[in-house]
View 1 (cartoon, helix red, strand yellow):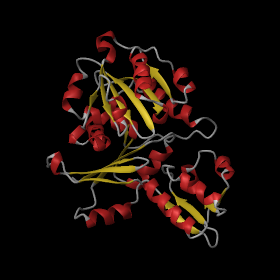
View 2: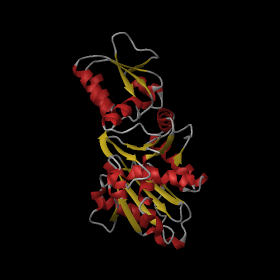
View 3: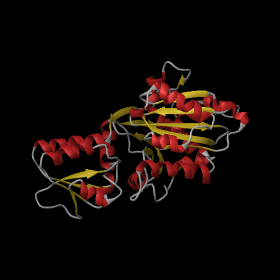
View 4: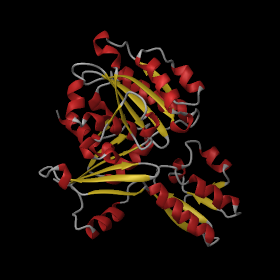
Length: 342
């Protein structure tokens, strides 16, 4: 079986083409521009050409919004299909408030721009040029805020983590989906496009990537650990002990520095940081279950993510799952599939 693993972020999509019968070191790897970056480049080109645009296709990451605003600020028009409009906002009135017209058909004279996190045609062409067959199975992750048309995306996203902790009791196998819940609209669109495969949130994939490291996974059976993923946009932290997540904290990376993050993590690991404190600080939130004493305060801190140097002067351990930190999410997807199949 050939497996294409994709960690689709706002700036890059990190790719592992996995052969189960090969060493990881001999599996092809790629770091490519993200779909949102490619859409932004397409919009910028059409802006230069002074062409009106029509967005259609799927819900996807909205990392092209700056290019879209620039297009509108130049006095050019934008129309969007109702399905594709979810890439801009959950509330269609907010989409119209941007100056975007919602219509099921492309207006005359508008240039179409296709939206999707996963384009089978792109991958067929790219892999063929690389001498690789189209995969039998796809594992992919994106960041999904869920569908919350009447409330804050910050609050809505963290409610999904609260549901995972409280209803699923933090079980690791619940972090990856063959069929994502309906409220995870971006993951649902992604799953529809990949066909045969599984999907996960990028935060979950990062955690699972840390557990891909055998020594880290083994440690969780003896004591609790704290896994920190400092991404370009979001910082997300998990408390893990005996195959279970005991706490989750999520904030915006741009609002943090090393000292502030470590100070909040100290409180978080003790169960003393509240959801209201994080939300009032313009983060997403924080929740811990009743922390077991035998977890020893989740004192071992493992760090991943492109902004990890923020905490390089603190007592933390940097991880490179599979020998490549940028592919942590891809290795995490493989680990999640392993948990699902146990």
